[in-house]
Length: 277
Image 1 (cartoon, rainbow, N blue to C red):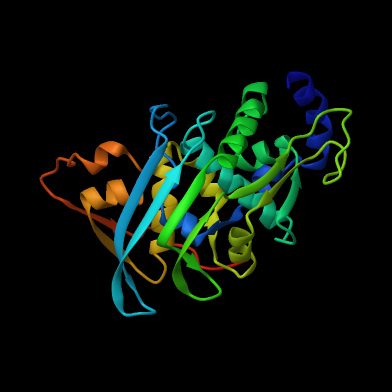
Image 2: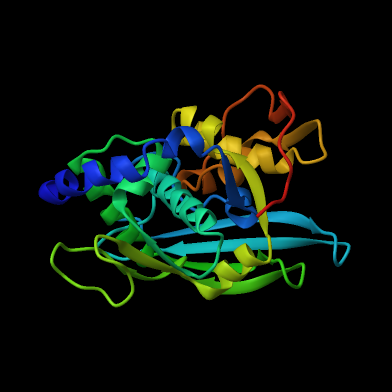
């Protein structure tokens, strides 16, 4: 992997010298901004392979409050996703956006992805990307009244992997799916259909890259979505922490101590628009 990184990096620097500084108007899929799909930290108990997320929400299409449930399971080999994995999945979404969401099959180089994320170009991060993408291949998500389908405008039941296929480039090995020097991944059809139908919001990727820590980045994505046409938000503190920002098994059994069990947020500065392609 080190030799691959050293061989590819100089050529990629010529092709994409300002990818980080120029890439500012990103995109976020609304379901991914709404629900936590990874741990908030960098590590999880490796013995935990299944997580349940559940909340109640008002459904405008029916005029009723519905229970939304998301169950996430992981492979024994790679485990559940953590905050860096969530960030990498968001980076894959940006690669698709750069390619205008033309096809669910996306060609890329690790160098491009690292540049978009603003991560250092080194062997450890190359290895980290590959491990993370393999982890997403092994993660299955079971949405019950919890996946918003753009086409129907309804909360539906859906079970899938975000990624259906991945092929990593190996020097000297030809690929039928990608040009020489490129890796390739393919989105699940249901997820990609939401991309194509515009279930997206503008995300200031320049600001996102400057934030530190999984909590801050998760808050930014969630609040930026919720601040659309709103100036303030109020949540029950425990529900906000456990249901909206990370899944932690302890949250199901323990309370978050606070003299004030409400979380309030004010919008400063105004959030960007809620949609875009």
